[in-house]
Image 1 (cartoon, helix red, strand yellow):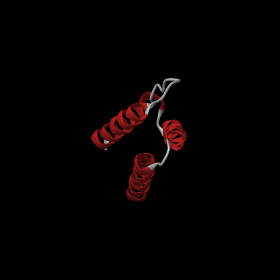
Image 2 (cartoon, one colour):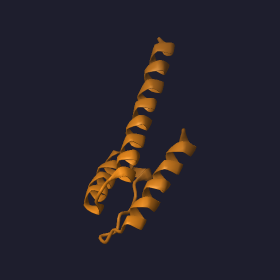
Image 3 (tube, rainbow, N blue to C red):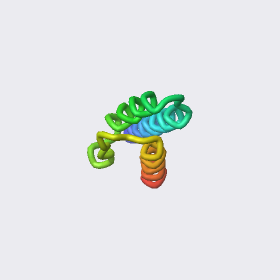
Length: 79
């Protein structure tokens, strides 16, 4: 029973990680700043409370790039 529970937990973690990286890819490939900001806000809602970004009211392409890099580095280190 423990082994099955462990496999389910690992699969869930892998699925979370896959979703996070799909958002990161979509943000990086986004065509407009509006699209990138919308995706970044969706991504931020998916993150656990302690990992969420404090997103400013005025967002630039540079901020989006830095924020995505921060999320990616954080998730890679935690896994």
